[in-house]
Length: 49
Image (cartoon, rainbow, N blue to C red; front, side, top):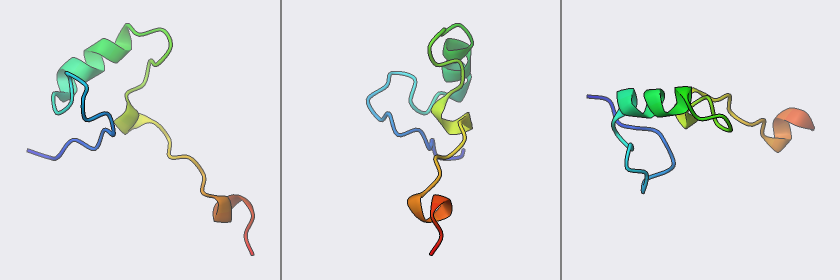
């Protein structure tokens, strides 16, 4: 089994990927789970030196 990468450790669905995906399919504000979102750009990626 792979380790859950979601940062929300206290979530009742943490570690249960199938239940998490089902929850997010019906959630209007967050339709994509944390593990499937694009990573935010780091400051040095936006402003290279």
